[in-house]
Length: 113
Image (cartoon, rainbow, N blue to C red; front, side, top):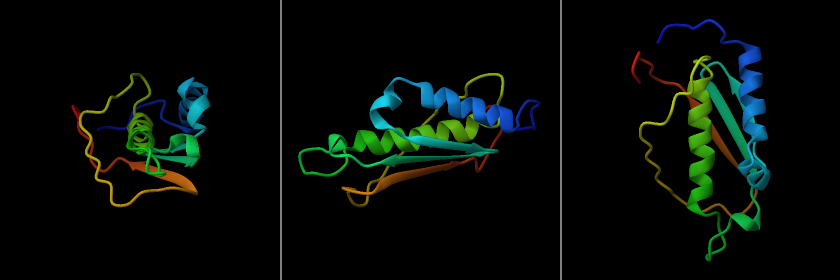
């Protein structure tokens, strides 16, 4: 992917503001930081995210990871939203306290993907 005009700190802050204004994030209360080709989501764990076994439900992990990947890619593209093509998530152990941290980083870019 070639460097595009308009990819700068202003673009990154606009993406962050867009994210923080999303109604769904009133519930999850995540914080997003965007840089060139990177994004980080930090979401404090709350019991409201738990499934019946008292740990964070998989949908919460997916949201954090998908959001981080989405904004990492969109940090490089100022004129359209680039959407997720595929996503594979393997859970190793549950989270029940602290904060979820999801980091997205562009590792390969091409004209189509």
